[in-house]
Amino acid sequence: AQTVTQSQPEMSVQEAETVTLSCTYDTSENNYYLFWYKQPPSRQMILVIRQEAYKQQNATENRFSVNFQKAAKSFSLKISDSQLGDTAMYFCAFMKHSRNNDMRFGAGTRLTVKP
Amino acid sequence: GAVVSQHPSWVICKSGTSVKIECRSLDFQATTMFWYRQFPKQSLMLMATSNEGSKATYEQGVEKDKFLINHASLTLSTLTVTSAHPEDSSFYICSARGGQGVTEAFFGQGTRLTVV
Image (cartoon, rainbow over the protein chains, first blue to last red):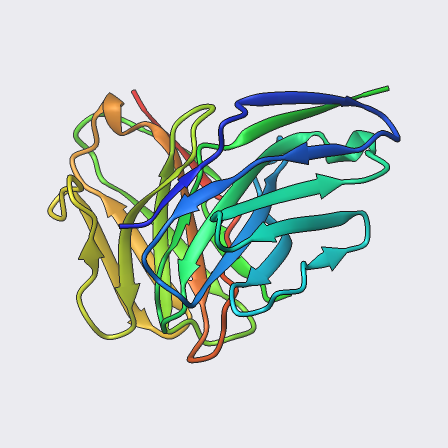
């Protein structure tokens, strides 16, 4: 079974600063996908960034980037130039590369951006 | 991105009654839908996976007779909480995926269920 671990229950960062959220996972699969989702107070799940395991290049989406270390099974999220609107719960998620497979989530990290 | 609509967004029901939650994919055909439960300040826990036209697959520990899932069409899945009890109070979220090759899941807005 796949497990996703987020070891930082809570983090805070000053506005405009950079913060990194950690995620590790355990799997015997070689092909899979990793995701970071944001859940603001509205509780709507919002996709932040996605990484295909077969791609060596780290994914980036504007201020969000990942550091994907496949051998170490690590998938951290870096948020640059943090904004107040980034305050939310962040979940790391794993999905096997197979049709109709479900997504498994880590415990989440509550990020607070301080003005 | 694709839109998944979940209804109702919140519901209060009395103990012993049943409540139905709908999850609709508005602009794509969802061959697979997933139902999650989220307790306060906790992560999303997968309850079951449903494929259109077939029986749902439940995760270990989830009572299939209590949480009835129906996925009768490519755009609609329903979760019915039967004989609800206060401990069933939670936030329920659905997500939907399209056919082969689609790697992203789209989430509904969630339903807050309170059983009194």
